[in-house]
Amino acid sequence: MQTHCLPAPRGPSFECYDPDPALALGPTNLRILIVNEDMRSADSLKCTLHELGYFTTFTAYSARRALVAAADFSPAVVLLDLELPDMTGYQLAYKLRSHFQQRVRRMPLLAIAERVVSGDAELTRAAGFMGCLTKPVPPLELAKMLRQLQ
Image 1 (cartoon, rainbow, N blue to C red):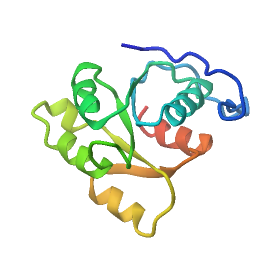
Image 2 (cartoon, rainbow, N blue to C red):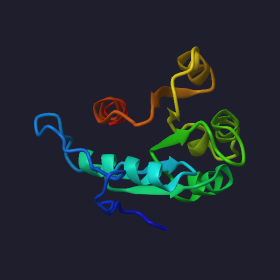
Image 3 (tube, rainbow, N blue to C red):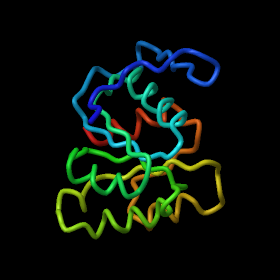
Image 4 (cartoon, rainbow, N blue to C red):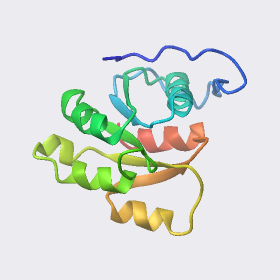
């Protein structure tokens, strides 16, 4: 189980966010579960989290693995891609919200969408997400959402 984010290799698709020092968050032990089947997107999100000061992450590349990780890793928040290979992000949110462990049912969920679709904000809130960000995830918006949890 990977519990610390390592900087992603530098290259055109892995450019890390260089935060404004005035806006950067201090290091924290907030446990973050990233659910995304695309390794590049997951690594990019991990890099952004690292640059914002969040180092305790775990990546699940499918909904099935995310269900196990949610119980075993005990994240404080789940960053959940809405398009997964084995079910939709909405279906996974429903399974998490109906999980037998209360702490899993109560985990905050943040949706990550591939593109803006009319009604996404309403759909994600109705499904129990605290919000929805689009790819590439804007670092300042992500930081704002994560600050709400601290």
